[in-house]
Image (cartoon, rainbow, N blue to C red; front, side):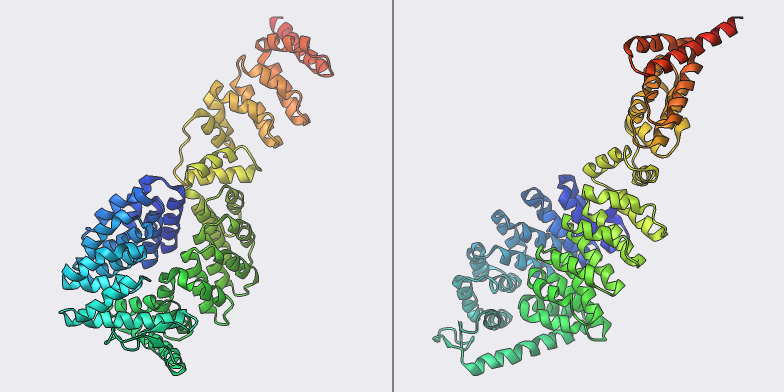
Length: 554
């Protein structure tokens, strides 16, 4: 949740995706607050994330439809459409009359997602609704593949309002164009929209060619219009391109190759908004000769999140020669949040370009899977400051499962690994909740004197540390146990006498001798129960303690 306030757009997008995967309903309101974000990509990610919560999010989303901020209402409508619960239709219908045209369009798009079930409610709007509501209803109707929707559009050709009549005619014409593009060019369309009662006839060859010529021309004109300074005009153009679907995608990809930065930026944003329609062309664009096209393709595939694109992005990460494109691909894989990307991203941490390494570290953090922990923690010891920082940022705000795994990781790995885990936990604001956690943290940070200050309460963790694979940990644990002292320490030091390393055994032996008489009962009991070569060591310690006592008494 804290990461939703990060200054970087990609981090906020990743935070939204992560909250969706975690699935805690407490995330709904923070995600809805992202609806007001200044970046379109963040708003889209937030809407997609809220939609994951389904019915649980509807009440909050319906309230957001009345928010004073226009863009919040736009995004709320989008999220409701993604959830697709039929009970939401009346609420959306009520907001078809929103004072903001972009909200009305978003509500209409959401209604269009429901398909045939909205036709009857929209028929009431078309007969009784206000002019703005009727115009918005047309935006919903033209995309619904149902003859009843077409019939409502035909009726609107006789509407009392000229703009409604013109929009209905344009919608019917657009359906014809899209049908031609999407069909096998064998379907039938109306010959004249203005005369809907005439019989349909097959499209002639010259009609097909005309459509093929007109389609790219219309797309080209719309793309050129993206440079308009008027915001409303830009929105209208973008809307038309999105509504055209696949016919517009190729044109938008071509527009990325222009030298006009305004058109490039606008085309890149619209491609991301086209979602599933753009997936196949964007996958092909990963092999485009133009590096900017490849970058935009990777970024948008990541944001769209279609599973089919994962293999394509992984392949691009392996074969791409341009480091800037590899960086975009690594980021795209992170946005998708797939476990499939963990291995290639781990390899990318070793990339020769630091930008790719940083992107890979961030993306592993976005994925939030336990298997991503180890490479990220190792990256905390990278020679490059930026890679270390990216890995630390990626580990800062783990969910509960990952945090639990991080705490468990304090027990494993080498000293650098454990210190990295402790550093990551600390950077994320973690505070040990139990004595066990505090001892593990202090041990990982090599702060053994503070472990000793905890006293006898630290002994259970220190007892476990006597079997640690790292000899340094075992040796330090023996010294801490010795300094804590007390009867409870005796059996632990006796256990350490069996250690495979001479240094550890010698330190345990010295500790028992220093404890003096307090250690004798435990040593004598162990001597009675032992039958192997350890008896010699135990007897030697007992004899030395008694010898010291004699000297002291003398």
